[in-house]
Image 1 (cartoon, helix red, strand yellow):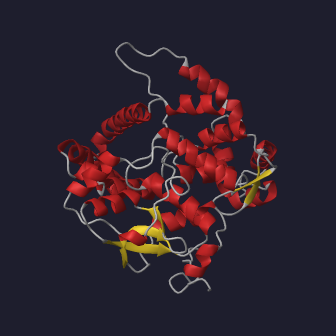
Image 2: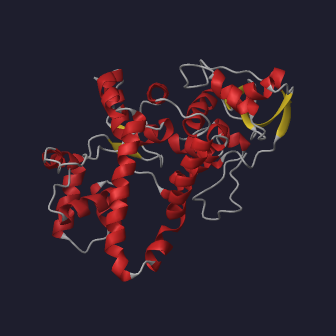
Length: 365
């Protein structure tokens, strides 16, 4: 079946029809399948006895079913969203706990949408959906998910694997080093493009081109250096700051800053556990998943957390408008306060992951 381009004449964001699910073209294919939520698929009422739960092959959850979480879901009065099932094997891709909770309620049918793709894609899609939906994955489970993706697609770029597994690209790189997989000279990014693993020489060339022709556009330099325009933009920004075009050469200065003394009564802000900041749409998608989680919605503590997150979601949606309406004499103070709150959130992220970076580093060693 062909791609449906009726809503996208230029073909940039084409929506795959069912037959296209059987031919994934990279990590971005899985991410698009995961993030669109299969809302365009019809909802069917399926007998629970026909559905298979396979925690070994389809789920990254090493501890299997969480009985406490199942009971929490079953005791709520909320109607469960449809689960996602692999049509060919009738195996749950996303929603195993919802299925168990429905059975605990005594239901003999459950609403479901179907994934029509092949078995290998269904398994990876199960990993991708479990990272962002339902009960959050532990650090160990996300590590296991990344290893599973690397084993299936060793040529996928670290950032592509990280987006699926819920880790940072640096964490995935350390895991890759510890797997013994063939590194290869090129990696395939989320956009499907193949890029060299070591881009330092290309960055150096881009730096020389920027210095010799400051008026050249990002795309012109990118084409000549064999880099993405976004990478060239990073090189240009580094040169303007007086830094090397190659990020690795700036680590010494970062380490020196990390050794600077912290003022009395203050705490050093640790690096964010997920490495790269999320885009605004990713933030809103994660918040939407959390606010639908019954374990948060139906407890006092959980509702308090969701209220705080809702305020942050407002900023993610309307940050530009908010900034434009702040009186000029308040801008500097508000900016300082925002930086301060960012540090507090950063510490919370570090505390929530329990030193994830250190554990991943030890596992990849």
